[in-house]
Structures are given as C-alpha cells and as structure tokens.
Amino acid sequence: MSGQARGGLLNGRVQIGRAATWNDAWRARYLRRNYAALVLDGGLYVAGAACVAAETVFPTVLSLLGAPPWLVALGPSLTLVGFFALPLFTAHWVDKLVSYKRFVAWMSVPQRLAPMAAGLALVFFGAEHPAAVLGVVVAAPLVLGVFGGAHVAGFWELVAKVLPPERRASNLAVRNILGSVLGLAAGGLIVAVLTRWPGLPGFGVLYLCMSGCMLLSLVAVCWIRELPNEPVRRSLPEGWRQRARLLPVWLREDVRLRHLVVARACANGVGVMTPFLAIHALGVLERPTSFLGSLVAAQMAGGIAGNLLGGWLGDRHGGRLLARLGGTAMIVLGAGALLNTAEVGFLVMFALLGFGNVLSQNGAIVLQMELFAAERRSTVFAFVSASNFLAMLGCAGLAALLHQPGGAIWPAAAAAVVLLVASQWYYRKLPEPRTLSLTEADGVNHRLHR
Image 1 (cartoon, rainbow, N blue to C red):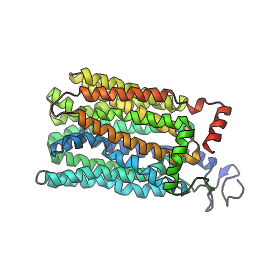
Image 2: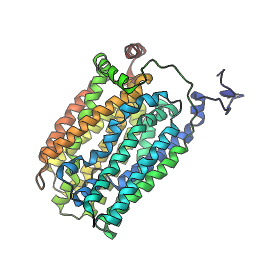
Image 3: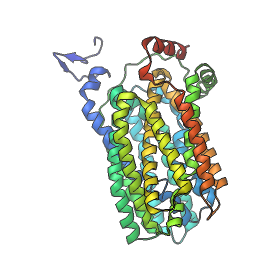
Image 4: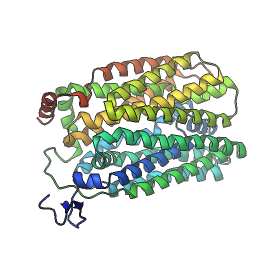
C-alpha cells in the first residue's frame, strides 16, 4: 500500500490518515459498520414506503381524491419515473466521483421531505380543496423519484464499494427483512390510523409517518464509513450524450445486455395488474378501506419470506435464480387474480406480491452488478433504468386501457401473465456470472472493453 500517506496496514492494523484511500483493507475494517448502516437505511426506507404502499394505499388515495382511471393506473409507477429516467443523465457525474456518501445524502434530503408536504396537504386541505391536494399528492412521488433517480447509481456504486460480492445479496435480504418486519407494524398502523381518522386526514397522517421513517433512514446513510477512491483514468466519454451514443454499439455487441433489457422490461408486466388489485379486492369483498392494512401486512409477510430465501440463495448462487423465482411468483399471482374471490385468497395473493417483488428486484440488482465490467456499470444501470421507464409507462397505459371502472380485472391479469412469461424466457437465456469459467470471464471483459 505504498504511496498512501499514513494509509494501509501498519503493524497489522489499518491506520487512518488524511491522504488514505479506499482499498480491501478498509472495506474489511468497516464491513460490519457499513453492513449494519445499509441494513438500517433500507429497512427504515421500506418501512416508510409501506405506510403509503404504492400498490394498495396510494391508488386508494388517488381514487378518493377523484383521480381519473388513467392516473390511478399510473399511480404505483409514479415514483419509478424518476428512478428509471434520471440515471441516464447522471451516470457520467457518478463516474467522476471518488466518494459517494455525501452525494447520496444531499440528494436524499428533498426526496424524503416530499411525503411530508403531501401529508400536510391531506390533513389540512384534503376535504376543502381536493383537486389542488391531488396535484400535491401526485407531485410527491414524482419528486421522491426524481431525486432518488439522480443519486441511485451513486448509491449502488457505494454498495458495491463497501460490500464484497459474497455479502451483497444477504445485505439486500436483511435490509428488506427489517423493512418487512417494520412493514407488518405499518399494516397495523394503517388499520389504527384509518379507523381513528377515516378518509383523507388519516391518509395524511400515514404520509407523515412515511416521511419520518425515510428521514431516519437518511441518518443511517450518514453513518456509513467511506474513504475516497484512488483517482483513475477512465476510457469512457464524460458527457451523457456521448455515453448515449455508445449504447447502440453495446446492444449490438453484447447479447447479454439485450437479453437483460428485454427481461427487465417485460417484468414490469405485473404493473398492468397491480394498480387496481387492492381496489378490486375491496370491491369483491365489500370491505372498508381499513382492510388495506391487512393487505399491506400480508405483502410485508411475503417480503420477509422472499428475503429469507433470497439472501441465502443469492449469496450462494447469484442473482439470476432469484429473478426467475420472483417472476414465477408473479405469474402465480396473475393466475390468482383471474380466479380468486375469497378473503384468504387475496391475502395469499398480496403475500405473493411481496415475495415476488423482493426476489425479482434483488435478483436483477445482484445480477446487473456482476454481469458487466465495473467501468461501464453505472452507464449500463442508467440504460436499463431508462428502458424500464419506457416499459413501465407502456404497462401503465395498458393497465388504463384494459381497466373499466367497476369491471373485471381479468384482462389486465391475463396481459400481465403473458409479459411475465416473456420475462422468464429472457432471464433463462442469461448466464449467471458466478458460474463463468476464467476463460469465459476473460472473453467477456475483452468484449466489454472493445
């Protein structure tokens, strides 16, 4: 570790120095701290999101405020607009950074304050000015997604920096397990709040709880220990326009990138069905809105099961298996939506939703971090996110087209199943990076750096 002022290993101990830079020794020294910080960040963030669950609570809020069906259909995807669209424009910034925590933390502040604005608007103005409040409520997930998308590539670079590959899947699982456990409590909170304050004020209180949990998660991000990377010379162009021009070349040369783009795009097919699933359940069962708490609790319980399985399988076998298991669960969910009319069936369906979501998302993230060379990882992430954004909009539009107020959910469920089967087909064609031989890996890296 020569060349690092007072950095590296000295007498068997890592010494902290002003000019020290990040390396494997630092990662090992702070692994427990950073692992715990990322768990707390993710757990508290997921718990906050559960207070206004995108697939259950949020569409109901939009419906109560008089939103048209197309907006209700788009509702669960509004947060993802920024998360999917912004990375393409910020990937070249992320590549210039030698440290990531401060960038992630500052970008997270407005992201976590947006639900607070929506909550205050619902509490104080929801009944008198529903149209104006609808605008604030719709803006909140957009703001959250825009600032989240601006820093999400930096966040995953931070994760890849502070955690070794064999600890990433389990970290994602443990953070989501914590979030799901807290989400179970959030299900009880939803029931209690909406029973005590039925209607829009109660939903406003839930938004305030969401903001509080997310601000606590930001404190956990600030607890992460990071040192700057050693500056390196990068061969990729710096501007986002120049990066965008490389993407057609990469798509043409790398069949795995093509398969990943299609697989993840088709996985958004579940969004054709989920915007109206909770509303459908309430209508079929003739239950009050407080029953949403039970559906959210079932979803969180499914998430816990998915994370327990995914953390163990992902660390040992990689991300592709997780993504395929998650997609299978979503196909079963679609079949259930076609047939089920019982309360127990709906609880099982929302448990499958939580189970499948966790495995699909964690599997795709782990696979993507390991499938491509580090130098182009942030740009590939941005491109896949942008393609997901377009697929998400297409699925939301298809959901609105297939849904008729008060009508059956089967057209949306059938379309979702078809897209999810296509996603499974393309995930099947992808390799698992951890099973590649050294010769295959060298060939992959050669093609990726051409």
